[in-house]
Amino acid sequence: MTISTIAKLEDFLAQQLLSPQGYAQYGSGDVSKSELTPFVTELRKISQAYVAHEVGARLSSPINGTTAAEAYALYYTIINAAKIAHLFPLMSFNTPSISMLDVGCGPGTAALALLAAGSKSLDLTCVEHSAAMRSVAERLLSKWKGEAVVSRMRIKASLNVISQGSFDLVVAGNMLAELEEEESLRTLRALISRVSEGGYLLLLEPGQQLHSRRLMALRDRVCVEYPDLVPQFPCLRDDACPMLASSSTDWCHGTIEWRQPKLNAQFDDLLSFNKHRIKYSAFLFQRGGSLKDGVRVISAPSKERAGIETLLCGKDLYGIARIRKGARSELNRPLEKASVFDRLMVSSPCTGNLPEDVEVVAAPNS
Image (cartoon, rainbow, N blue to C red):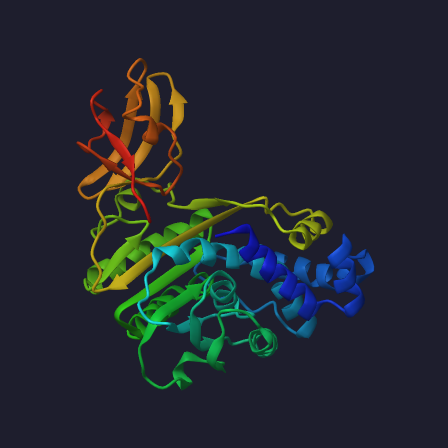
């Protein structure tokens, strides 16, 4: 993800969804409070609905009109698009156009992220149950101008009305968490049936403990029921998640460090929110893919009494790795400097105290 990607997308959203006067203000500094107040009012309602939502129950949509849909698009699109843009480089497509199915598309978030970040055209199919949100998504996607374009677009209210077919990329972003347990499992199976050979399935949920652990459990179901769907991120293994099995509280999630764009930051000030960092949980699968080598950093390295410790996960490996005091060297420095979800190649993978001669190398294209 580049700063220009997110800045370009926010400028586009401001141009399309603010008044001409508001967009002029955005270009020169802060947007007036009077311009943003209607959106802030709706964002408070939306936020309260998500906070009150019980995990495992169906969420009644808080988007009940055009202003609410536009408010969601102005604020949350940037945050969720940053997650999509962050994960997009993990996928490889050999064609100039990507066929994408986005279920729970909201205002077209995933497509807008890919359009802003990439150069490939999109053959796009979106599913969104909110009529107001569908209207905003169609407006935004039809007006996008850039190197990447939408070659074809269909926006439907239900997955059931879309004819059978397969897609290079199937996305479910912040959607499964809004469904009841059985409904989320049925929906997931329906999405899996639409992934083409060599195609990708991206499941993305809010970076919160209960949502993340629920997504981890769904990941285990996918690995058991669909062995041809191979984990690509963050997992380097395709058996049961060891974190889920060993703890009732731990949750696998990452954090995106970003330069928050100015309108998003202004909304934060008005709402007393804080999106200076973005937490997320995600799993990426590829049909017919291969597991990657190495180990994945699951917790940021920290200085403890016994040395520098971090939690690692890889094939047949899960546990704390420790660089003992006095054993720090250029060979193991990449482990000490690693961030969560970095993939590392280790000369002799192990947990516990690392031998002094272990060499650690950061893997490209993690």
